[in-house]
Image 1: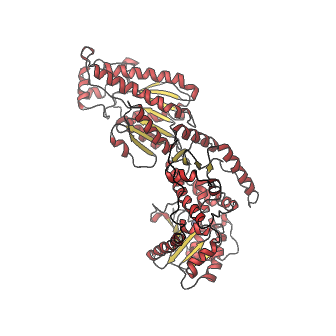
Image 2: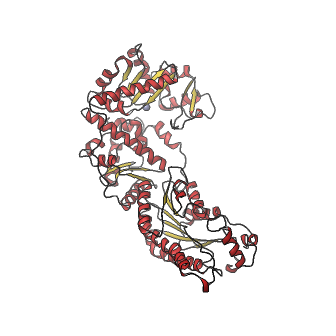
Image 3: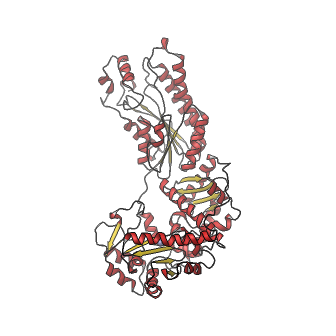
Length: 600
Ligand SMILES: [Zn+2]
């Protein structure tokens, strides 16, 4: 039996279930066939996988099967790629490894490569052979023992690293550059353009660290970056080349030309994928990665960080020698590679979109963040509470401590968030305070001013700062204001709260009028009696109950339906208001309160 990595599993997180068991003797016999088409190969592998529900075995299964060792490791190590893609790459690789590694020219992955290796390996292999280098692709190691095979991999790669170091080609970097012109609207505009070209919203992750920015400003970036990926396999995530600058139309034309140039030579007809870039090099933004999820954008960034090293080290050896683009095309349009991506299934409704939630550390705000994450959005959480930063530990969440009454703090938080996700599509204005109850004649001016500052003015500041980003949202901006039942039905003793929420309500209505031309919808939710929030301390609850001559328990369910309203109930409506259900609705005010007699 051969246990081989299942297609689509990540080696960082793989489990036993991620390996597919296939019949080894049978697969070795396949390698001896004169030819085997991709559909036939997939069929043979699927019908000789011996565990129901196992993942599809790797497209390299036959190659793993023909190596006469119990354990086989395969990587696309940077150092090996740099040397193999430099002048006289093959000779250098042979000089480094001598008889220790079999050297195979570049052949596209799949049956042809496996069949070639099955014939070539026995010819080149000696008693010292512990590995195999596939030029412009990667390296294998093998042994009778898992640890030994792993250690041989480290050893083979270290030999390549030392070779580079001895030629002053290891510690190379682009001339470092200092970020000086990042503007979040530039990132949002780029994200909108890329999403438009793709036909669906995508996140944009910007990195203007000295390394990325240095490479983007490299005097020869045009030549260095417009060759090929470091190894062809990257293409399914990165597309063949990064976009230079921000002209998505120019990139799309070049991509179309690449497709037409190569599709003609393909055996079967091909359908062009979307012509949007997955990465860009820009002298101001640095490096930008595009993807439908935060995880995808992180992968693209990580791949390119390595690609920069691979290219610059090959340069230091005398010149980066990229692969011809027909080889890259063969992998990008190989059905077996496309199948890896399709495995993801239908994306969730907010895939590629970004939601900003204020006051997200607890209560309704936290529930909104959860509801939006569940629907596939990347979420930016802002709050005064430092817990906001580590509220969710996942790549599609960014939390920042922010005093929303401070415009400069909002700017800083938005800049950081725009670097991470590239914009804002949905804004949930939730942050608010409930000052302690007081009749008007004893209401402290300070309490009044604080309520107005936090519940009204801070929302104005956030709206002003976020509006340019909402206007650039690929599918139109959405704002959900968490209002209050107090707006249509104020209560005694809550003048500051009720007046501030009423002012916010009017602000939202004016925003709906002013922002409709920018494609931004603004809707309001009026919750009432949501007691699982930080606002409702036992003290506030008792005091409000008293104002209505009710017990706390009566007060909790004091609505027509005699039901309790939770943060989650409010959050689910807020998330739906950002979705297709409310696509034609703006300036609506919807209660979530179990029914209020006074308002019927
Ligand atoms: Zn490979």
